[in-house]
Image (cartoon, rainbow, N blue to C red; front, top):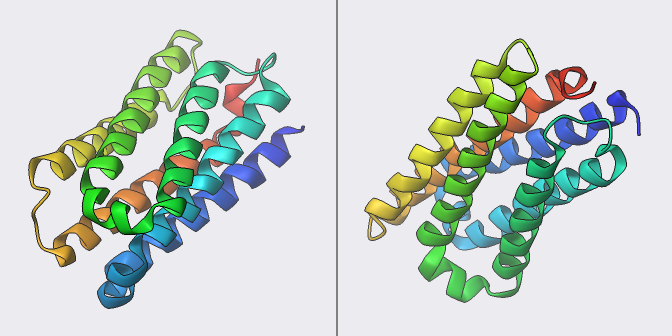
Length: 177
């Protein structure tokens, strides 16, 4: 696959994640009724994109193993969310928190791989990774929070994940040797 294809795939994943985040923040009643579905679909697309990008460009890509690990875990969580929606509504803060913490840590670690290769803009990946991990920890600290608060935190976290994917799309050329 070409760099343009990578940019397009990451761009699509980013836009879908941001749209899901905006919907969670804007329409709390709708978000509460279908939160698990929005989250599951957005996570599934994001995870599949990461896995596809790994398999098509692993030999030419810096830090490609992190894309595979993040993609596989995101797909597994997405499938769990999509097929267990009633249970997910009860455990959403914990599952979502795990996803954010892991995704944030992988982006944080990957940013130092980028720094080692002299890639400009590696600090943005560090910042996004830290923000995502902090959002995940917050999700664990107060799981009994009102559904409106969970909807807002979920929406903001999805937007952060989308921004991370769009950052990857914009910097796709920097991932290749």
